[in-house]
Amino acid sequence: MGSQSDRAREVLLNSAEELFAIHGIDAVSNRRIVDYAGAANHSAISYHFGGRDGLLRALMERHVAAMSLRRDDYIAGLGEAPSIHDYVRSRMGPLFDVLADLPRPSWRAQFLAQMGIVPSAVEIMKSVLAESSLPDGLRFIHGEMEGIPEGVLRGRAYLLAHMVISACSDQEVRMNEGTHKGDWEQVGRFLIDAAAGMIAGPVTSPDGAIRYPSIPYL
Image 1 (tube, helix red, strand yellow):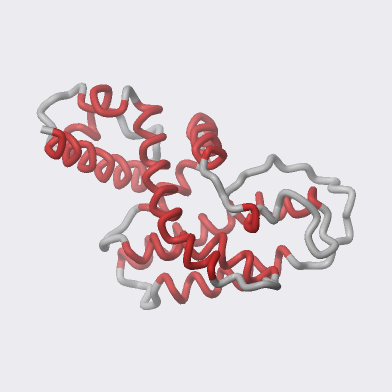
Image 2 (cartoon, one colour):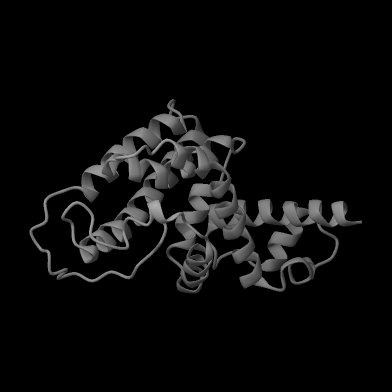
């Protein structure tokens, strides 16, 4: 019984992720997700997730868990004197590994982009990410790093979170369409290089004139 319930839950998650990615979170009803998943019980989302917020949380928890499984290898490769690029790769690399392992077509990056533009979904995303534990060595935005003030690091991490997910969403659409011939390893290398450059860039406004909330995504 448990395995059958687990399979039904996974089908609902996959169906919701796809529909949210394509149409937007607010544009897709629970009934539409249930019908798309082929579930006979129209209250299946309430039964398996306790409601819509529970569904969104489960989707984020699934993604974060998948990244956590891949993080150990990156941490092991940091070495004794890691560079900013090494730190950024350790934080972002698992994202590209997860995206690369998804079957085509995939919807994960587009779904994450949609989570970032709906206020209620943003709060759920922030809550799940805040609950995920990172090793102390990867908490580099929570203090000064190589002369870059904490406030500047937090602001840059906030911007990067949006920029990287937006870029990944665009690439995922093109990969699904067959108009992008590269792979997630290539995309990841480019974005990690760009992110490391942004993190390590010159600081001309150390007082943090623009304030951004902390998002523990990068």
